[in-house]
Length: 514
Image (cartoon, rainbow, N blue to C red; front, side, top):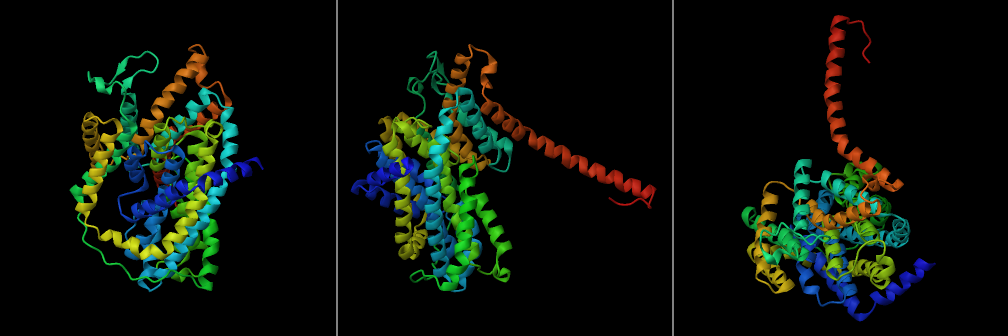
């Protein structure tokens, strides 16, 4: 009942005219950036961070959450109409959605994507409201060693599952941890990695780093490699669904929600894995297997529900533990820190208006997404006709303006260009971006918990695992680190075992093959 009362107070905060306006603005911006390939919600929020310094924190976070939800939905429009996923999580939607569009059923595909996103987002947000306080109660009982172990686990899992190479993931993580060390030591006051430049003594502003890595790096990469001609849009009327479409969609919506929410809450779970799983599940359970690959509505309904449910799942560890599990959550965590708000379990106690206003705004944002995107779907698809040079020139302009607005120092523009070149180089050599951002944000916090654990144990190294939760987490860390070696040894052992069995059979053909 206490959670319900807090949620009602959150609605009173979210439904104020100003916050309602920011929720609507966030949904519109998020849908627009979701439609445009390469411009995800993380980049949009990073670009807007400098412009929100003077905003009230609750309004800014509500707008960012709207961008996140809108971005998760927006990619489905162009996936269906143009076979051009705006987000990696909507790649699966394009498989069946575009086939439906080519068969003259674009309206039904857009409708099941929009309604599925609404259903999954609403259920996911309800689960967030129910489970986040439980996670907080558990987290408050943890000590520094447990927090340290959980953060290390988050770093490793995010790094190990991204990119084509684990080595590249750990290289990106190392870059992020190194950038987080720039400035003064918080205990001794000694300078670290400042290279004799006084302006680096305060460290690198996380807003400048995020804008450089996401916006400038992506713009340089697109300018160097991609040329896209104007595309034609499949004409679509008002999206609607018939009785048979509703009958075939409602179960995939629920199954997609059940897959998406837990994967979103897991470190590096993301939306890609549950959308793939949802598509596989629907393909196995469908009563119309002949339609898969030719425009099955279940192949749109399930993955789109999983996509939006994962967004709500992502916010659970972000708000309850201060642990970002994807790039967008990392930038939202940077926004909290920008406003001087300490993320973590105490956030629910210290900032209840902000937290519950944000959660309530997610219900409102989901409703706005449904009301806005059903009639405007064809309009969003036409955004792809914007010439790429104009689009990315505008991104570079706003990135430069935003970075300069942080401290009104020209030196920040130099940092922007240097780190933008780093972002370009990372894309060139296949280094994932997320580990760098997570390392930059969590690195200083890990250092703080490490020092606190040593202080409480008087310098004894056993202070790092003096709590049961810490021991369990470190065992998981060891499993993650050792598993590739075990898998490699097993793969090498099996061919040797098979060869020995074949040799034995050649010597004695009467042996029974096992």
